[in-house]
Length: 491
Length: 120
Image (tube, chains in turn green, yellow):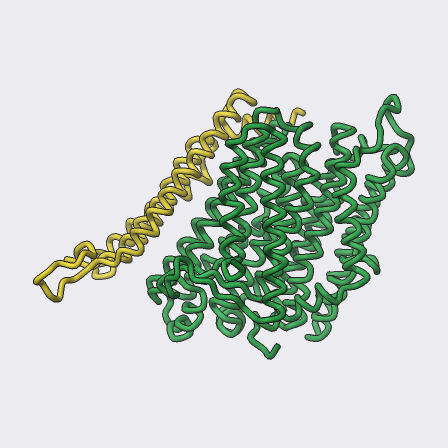
């Protein structure tokens, strides 16, 4: 059983998805989804433990040896990503029950959970597979279910947001297929490890740089790299709270993982950075994302939209770390992958609590919430501090590594811009805090603290923000080993 | 001349790809955008099939008693079967969204939708 863990990671949630639709009872389908997420989390923990203590796992689907069969390959990098995706799913699902019952009509709830598990399955599949075409298939599984999930938002703008995401996401995915096809026509293989071996001999051929370009642009669309982020703010702002919490902390992270995988494992750092000079385009775009998107966030009247713009800025930090191409830089990127999932998960869940009680997440509607919903707003404040990067929170650890990596290469203007991004984060977090704590509550005083079933999962993530901020040994250790694996330097 | 006629299938791919892409960018009608997306995806399917095809090649089935048979690579075709399914699913989800947008806004023209959103 234990040697089948890589495939069980994907197959069990995949089978749970139709089951959740078939049981037809909201509570029962929630239970199916929750068990699937718990299962995925358990498997991910076991896989990470195995990878850290024994080494990478190569699983051959149907016992067909690679490169002919599909290989699932788990190493330090994707074991960590699997843990992030399944961990967030396991925390979001207990939260989902009350939130979804309030936001979605009863007869649609089983289908909602089906789409949610499918989305998780797709994201887990992208992370676990070692076959490039398999990446595309899982990418579409996760994207199609994400479009449906976003469209279930109460605001009708959720529909247009989902439509826009569908158009841009499909273009991105099609670009990725073109890239994969061009690689296949040159090498005759789809296996990542096999591609990594065969590609260096082909570098002189013009097809390979073209494939690289298509893949980079396609993945950048998926991870919402500035200026390809246009689908993201509306999609996050108008999706149901549960969906925003889940997708914001996982979908773009998995896309960042895809970028890591293709740039470092498939094409190799030497080709990506020395021949294609990918850092010359990624670094400026990442810095532009950090500055411009943080500035845009300041002017948003809707807090979920504000956080969405901040997400695009935070993705800039991850891409910046990757573009430095040093062990510390890539480790900072991977570390922020994990840390940002915790930060945005906590913040969006706090906003879900506000949505549940107040019915709006516009800034002016949050007046006085510091008094009426103290625990929710305390969660928001701690999440906000973490987003800024205050010591003792995870955000600080990420920024510390990132600034260190930039200074290591003597790029002090980059380090300065990272800190400017933090200052801008102070402004947009403060805007919310000011309204919530220093204004009189509006309305008739009927607003109460959010129910425990919403608060508990939110606080689990908030405490994780502090826990991994105080004791970063585990996360930073895994991130550094993952970076060493990707860069192919001694572990 | 050889580049134009000898590689005509790739020129068709590029042509279709640009037609689809341009339709998606230039049209304000949500259904037309999806049609553009579909054309765009179809061009990639032709790209894959072209890659695997060998002139005079046959289906990869062993023919008894004959040697040196030229086979067409079946893998791109198989991959594209998957991509077709994905394309159909994308189109279905997209059209379903358009139906719901029509119900919510009463229009499927992008600029009219933006106008309604700006008023709110």
